[in-house]
Amino acid sequence: MGKSIQELEALVSQTRRDIVRMVHAVQSGHPGGSLGCAEYFTVLFHNIMKHQPSPFNMEGENEDVFILSNGHISPVYYSTLARSGYFPVDELATFRKLDSRLQGHPATAEHLPGIRIASGSLGQGLSVATGIALSKKLNKDDHRVFALCGDGELQEGQIWEAVMFAAHNKVDNLIMTVDVNGRQIDGDTKDIMGFENLRPRFESFGWNVIQMNGNDINDVQDTLSKACVLSGNGKPICILMKTEMGNGVDFMMGSHEWHGIAPNDEQLASALDQNAETLGDY
Amino acid sequence: MTNLTTLEKKDKGERCSDDLTELRQNKKKVGVIYPALAGSRKKNKFQNEFPDRFFQVGIAEANMMGLAAGLATAGKIPFTGTFANFSTGRVYDQIRQSIAYSGKNVKICASHAGLTLGEDGATHQILEDIGLMKMLPGMVVINPCDYNQTKAATIAIAEHYGPVYLRFGRPKWPIFTDANQKFEIGKADLMESGSDITIIATGHMVWQAKQAVERLRSEGISAELLNLHTIKPLDEEAILDSVSKTKCVVSAEEHQINGGLGDSVAQLLARKMPSPMEMVAVNDKFGESGDPIELLDKYGLGVSDVVTAVKNVLSRK
Image (cartoon, rainbow over all chains, first blue to last red; front, top):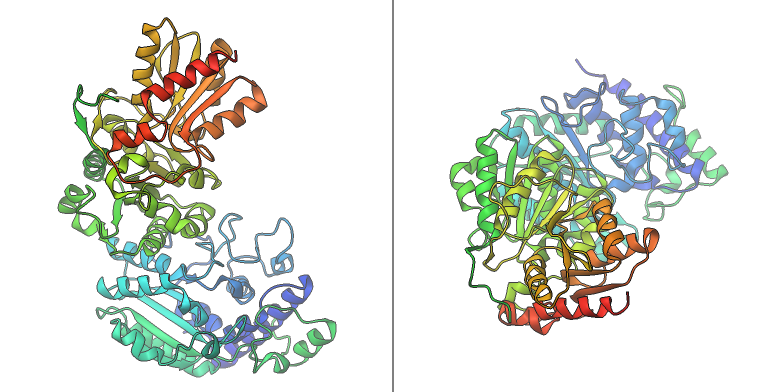
């Protein structure tokens, strides 16, 4: 069952190519965080979630649901949705262009399959995911809700409102992942709003916390599987996922600089050289 | 001074609670989400009957709006409830992105709107909420005039798919509309027929305007009164029909002059039927503590203010 590690790695390589090509084409978008989360998205959508890409059902009843809170990493989200069957891969070429369903930040208004909520203004997705999780409990639907937010995003107060609520109400069908890349638009998170020791912070709020290396595909596979086993035990689950912003493209790694800028032609060529075309470019 | 002693009075929050309970009993997918004000609001009846569908969120309105968006995504019909100030201004971005832009079927029920909140003062007396909410694409904005109309509106918005802002007040207010009325979103109620002037009022100001109509009648002025319970979508047809007959308008609302009902009516008339108009509204000021009726009088929303506005606009005809 599921894809082999080799198949997942091929998908990750292709997704990285999609990300840099999409952002390069319109000279805008957010490649850094997108690249850092390529393994997470790939494993989650191809090997962990029980979901139905087509026909897409907004309510998501009787399937696992994913909510992206840090909407600016839309390139990795769109690539993953397309390559797991939600919409044609060719549509990635319309990213951020007029009349596209692939808005700069994810939106429902254009009815892109796979998107259930608009995100971009930070801090809101965990609340939405919790609402869907509550609904699943009311419906006696034992599927799970996955959510992703950034570590810089934890500076938003609404996140902690939702963290309190989910623990108090034992929303244990909720698996939130925090992309701990240590960077945000203005620099390193530790310099901007020192926020270390995330594990005890979440534990003290009543969450079950596990950690993984988000750029180690085996670890991602094992930890997400473990999170599923841990769910349903009275506590929401938080996965602290260590990643490298810009992972897989050497000149984008080790800095916050590539949070939200696009590569030029030369840089694109270098990025593509580092990531093989495994499944065909869009 | 306005006389509030002649009719049975109830606050509209009680009505909302009774109606939600009725709706749920009729197997609607209704849920209620409340911040830690349930005691001061009136959702207790629903909470007692359907505890699994009542979500107490604590003092955390942003999360409340996000939870509502999530529940709606999954097909439920969430009703959020808190004071109007915390239902709009405090959570504007959450409503904008997660509810309005995302097209979610959330019903934002907001009590304690306007000056008539009274003694709590300007921190809580929001007078900008209609403007904030009507600017959001796709948002329906409703401000019923009494207890019975709030009941009818609560049921009607559950039947409507899409985000709705339902605004009501805190004070016990006269009940003067039919207990079994049918509420049609976007359709103005003709409360009084007249030929000299059209008064367009919403919320508590409908009662003020009704009294003004009586006073004007005694002076030989025939005023038509439209209860515009739905500010958006605006009942353009009803307004234009009336103004084409009377040739002048007064709007009356418990809201800032900028961004409210009068603003919508003026925009319509400027485009389709330019006519003399006066606006009874709060003129770019914050409120203050005090008795609700004294506040209405001090801030230019008394019955005599409506009468004066009518006379002013008649002189411009």
